[in-house]
Length: 171
Image 1: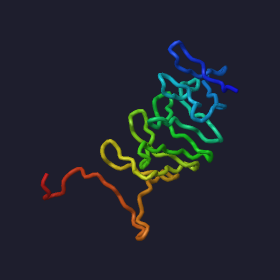
Image 2: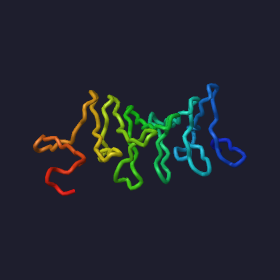
Image 3: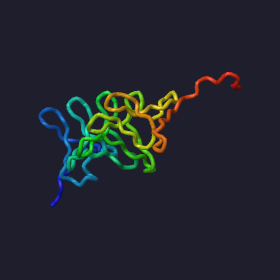
Image 4: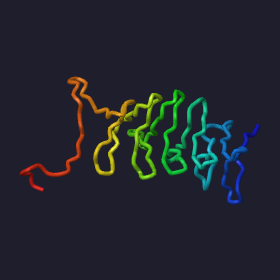
C-alpha cells in the first residue's frame, strides 16, 4: 500500500494542497518524519489563507521541523511562534547541541519566552539577553518579572548591566 504524497511542481518541489478557503493542509496520514512538504530538498511549513505558517497536529501536539536545525513557524509579519504541546503549553525548541534552548523571536530579532496554558512565561534554563546586553526576565500571569531565587536563603538575584563606571574606577 502506498501512502499519499504531495504533488510536485516542474522543478520537482513538493507543495501543499489547499482547501476551499485557501488554507494549505498537511497529509497527516504520512509518517511524522515525512509530514512536511519539501522545497529544494528542505521541509517547510504550510500556510493559511492569510500567509501565516502553522504546525501540523499529531496526537494533539504540534510538530516542528527538526532536520539539521530546528525551525519555528512564522506569522505573516515574520514573527516566530511557539508550538504547543497536548496540554496547550507553548514549548521552546532545543538547540542543536541539545544542552540549551532556542527561544522564538519577533520580526526584529527580539527573543521572547514561551507561555504555559495559564499565560505565565516559562524559563527554559537560560535567560534571554536583550540586544543591549541586559537580561529579560520571564513574567508571571500578572505581568511582574520573576527573578531567580536562592532556595536556601529565599533571596532574589538580579542581573544588571554595567553601563557607567563607578566613581574613582578607571575606564
